[in-house]
Length: 399
Image (tube, rainbow, N blue to C red; front, top):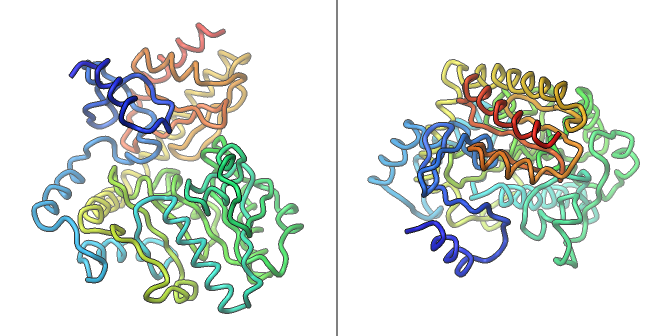
């Protein structure tokens, strides 16, 4: 089917909720994707940090194929073997004692919001229900998670929002101290703000946050939907800050390309959920759990993938810093951890993204003027060099 016809039918039949680029992607392998017209693209978006091992990673594909021949779906009314194995893997490699599975990051955050409120009311009374989040955060698109998101542009038109949320600047301990009251049940924070522009906190920020939570009987939720599963060079970003959350949420990279979310919690907090408290029909079904097991096992093998992520992350940042020196009138800042990297520029960056796409490079614009790079953890130095050549050419034309 010719591209024009596909695009026309997409516009005719699919709700207009995305500003889609006029290409139709049909095939992917590793760090490359191909359009319907056969054009090749170097993919530094990675499904927005989803394709953690690249497109169609062989071990993940084989796991999906084998599971699809065995069992696609059964209800959570019954025990599911791949789900049990995945939960064990996550518990053995994190702070958590218990896991709840769902289908997305928004659902994982929704579950976390419900859990901390239920736990806090049961232990401290019905008045302890407020959740503090950060300005410029992003936690999802459900009504509760869009309320938790500290950005007006995502909330506009959906009022009245869910009551019980307050917002403070990210990386500002004094601001947190000033708004915690006897009503506060939890703080909900991203270790690194992704949609907010790849904002990284001071090294002691989360240490101080954890101390505040302990002092005021407040739970700490870390939204690691984007930072989790090795994206920052460690399996979970909280490991960089030497703290332990009470609740953690995952999605994106967890399934290696299939939709799965998870909420992790300590036994103490998880005990607030009992049969009937919360549920998900598709959450943790056999197919997605098989893919997630293959993904995690690959990431953990000999530490190779995590070492690769750290090395290539430094390579990527060094290359972008070179562009900053070359184009000081355009590039303001380079920041990131592992392979979650942002380049802040002096202008709205959608034109840069479009120009790169026309030259066979997929990158992403967030927070208006930040180019976000979230390539698969299998990216090689030659891929980064290729990306830098294309981006450098685009910036040269702009300057």
